[in-house]
Length: 275
Image 1: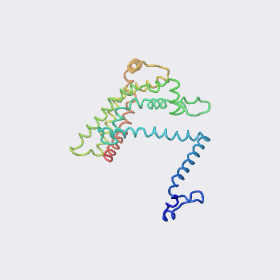
Image 2 (image 1 turned 45 degrees about the vertical axis):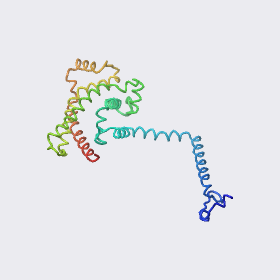
Image 3 (image 1 turned 180 degrees about the vertical axis):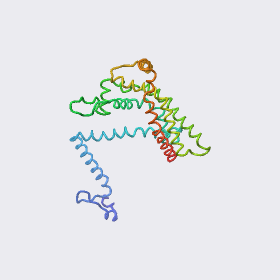
Image 4 (image 1 turned 30 degrees about the horizontal axis):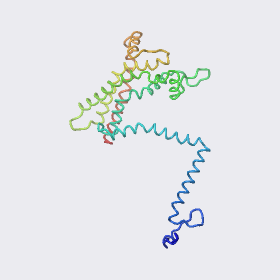
């Protein structure tokens, strides 16, 4: 029996024509689709060989997307595998509080170096600035001071943040509980005041080590090496007195109150919205 005799009248009425005048029967459609896919793949491969830049361009968005999405993926995995978090915001805050020092050390170093850069950007007859931007700053530090140079002040940063972040949240929680009746959520005014005082209190205790951190981060630029956090503290106190450890306290406190008041108000709002 021939294959054409197996076609029913209904199947003959639904015949399609792909590319040519000859009909495509149901059992032939799979091979037609396969040929179309093979032709498309060959065309793409030939285009990639002729234009190698396409492969590089297509890879870069994926790498950028991976870097940008990794923090969110970390939060997602922790929420999926652990029960210690009340929600997304709580997971982000706790992760930052416990693990931020080493991860943020290079970013903090670049910030301090750029903030201390006082050369004018571009004026005729004036020397160019040492760093042209954050990326150039990172590349220059890596080239001149090695990979370890990117982590200057990391120990001081960790010593600064570990106790002060604990004090930060304890102060906030205590003030909220003292100002809120049992069984009720703190009001917006309470959150603003408690957050502001928590930020100010934490920075009052963090300022001495913040001074040490900044000095160690700038030491590589000034071609000066401290043997460690203690050596930096002793050298600074011997040369400039104990008052050196409280430089910037006023501006830190003035900045901390409004910034942390708004931070905690946003935190509470998001926590209750997403819980």
